[in-house]
Image 1 (spheres, rainbow, N blue to C red):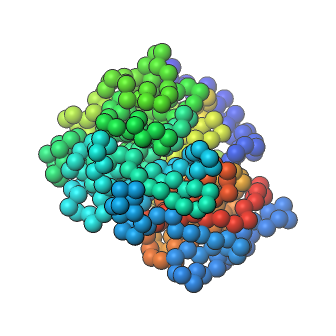
Image 2: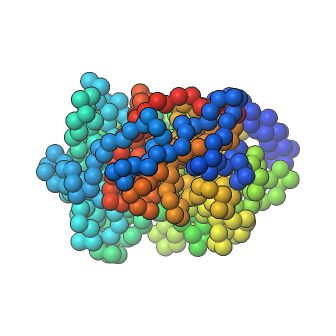
Length: 464
């Protein structure tokens, strides 16, 4: 049922009032002028914010606050898989899982596009785990044992441009292809642009990979699952025209669980795109129109005509006034009974105001999108990409922007603080996620392909 103006006004007021509520993240209200530069200390409630200034790394890899340390878990072309082959290149989206006997399991995407001959270390074509033998991407599963030893093996191979993805409520990983080449294009032998499920607990479950075609075929970025309603929310990193934020509604009677997604028919459920309205009931064509923290939009959902994009790409199947778009829709995280969604930046390709990053929160109960983080152009940090909700409050955000790259935190009340700086090169951070026990923050530097484990005196951040 579409939202009418009166209903949305009620929802907007309720959401606005909720900006001060407690929760895992609560409200993130980082206005451009509130951004803390790396060298500037900020304080809240008389308590220090963050962990202090970053200290240059003698090894030239990762600058961290005093008292923190890191170790390299995997390194492309240096560490090896159980098969003896090298760890693949281009580390990206990552999730952690609690394994047996204190083992931490990580599923690590490798964002490798195009034919295998293009890359020195593509994901190995492990027997039984290959979707398209011509494609170079995929995932590896990394086992970190209590004694510090590491094992790594292939979770899926023969996929393309595995960028982000999402952890499911039942303990598996959904890996997303940010590339929609058809069979016969760029040397591919299968169609691409799909989501695949990888089980880090059961290697046998990953055999004979099958795309989840019900989620659509386009340049996927990230996905989360609503554990209560069963809906999947998905982002698309695209432009000309800008990409979309999707919702997949499962068919009646469908129950999620390990291996259940691969049983779906290609046309199962309904894939939808958002149509946002503001508090005056006016259509919003692009999320870049929002220029103030706390902006709330009502959301209706419009069915996708052809989710596989057989003749027209999915995002091009809508007219200018049918759906709401955004540039570089990137990372997502499910928390606080909703989805946190990143739009990495907006420039001339977007009809609204330029910005260096937004984080939105979609509330499925109220059917609203609320702007929680807004980074102004040249405000200190830029290009938020992968995100995670911290067990110590607020968000941790991986930067994929211009110049020096950081991991930074954003508190419940809008302050930001640095956590790490890439001292190695200008490559992006990705795959930021805490271990199940909250003791270790894992993150990737995409080039030369590093998975890093960061430990130190983590503590709850002040709310103000």
